[in-house]
Length: 284
Length: 91
Image (cartoon, rainbow over all chains, first blue to last red; front, top):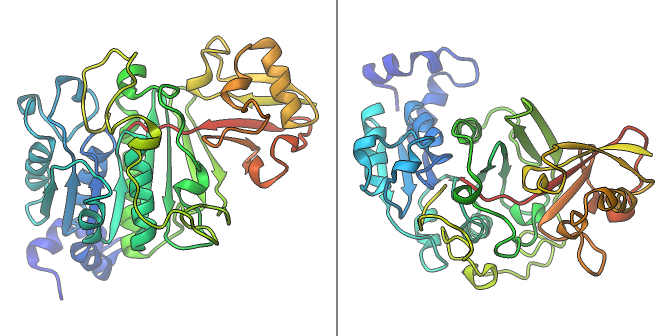
């Protein structure tokens, strides 16, 4: 299908760009990407995906906008405080690009609903803020055969990678086979996060998601990019596929979705008991 | 062997806020033992009581994960960079 006159004008800089062109722009328009977490990482990721013309963008978030979110979560405005994040995010994205269909999923992801929510999308972007959902999303993407664009931030440091389905290419569990015990890793609400940092990492996630849709370039699969904003330093390390990985290894032991609160001892968004924070159920 | 150890934000409480510290040893285990002498408590954040690396922390020598080299017995050379990478979940 060809592009409309409006689309040709809107996406002119992509259409003339080697690596995208008219055909690539059509792929973006026909694509669907799910962004998990409409927060620090999800904001730039979803906004760039919408601006790029990704035809269908799904947003998963159970939270409402809080004033303390606005230092970094550009999807939401001051007037949005108290609104469901998926609602204010949908408004922002639709304003940015009315051609984009925004589907909202105001749910907590669990083993019950993860396949249903993730199943309809081509690519998944993980911008959540807690370990149980990160493991759940990783496992679900491996089982569904979906590429997962990973990003994570803490204080002044962030990391990003791409986990492709199947063996011979690493997944999140190959990187970190087990989540840390509850209470040993502070959340952003406890440790703070530099507001621009998720802007950088979430933008990298948008880049990788768009490249996966286009099928161009080298993806971050097999590479973990690390950014230290304080030191102005980008480094990367190699990720290896773990043949003993419980999900994507030679003999998988995790073959159905598990609700990880059970062994993490920490519900999504819930802080360790000693933490002083406002409870919130979405991304930091 | 003198090496540089990159310390992630989460563990900088042990190093007085330093993100890079010098380390000394012939293997990763010796380097971590050396750190423990100067920064008490840091080893337990990385190594189990049984003496293996925690499954939620990765250690790299230059850009290679030591789990795919010799784990804690991985040898280090003069000038190597040992990076500690814990799982973080913020979004």
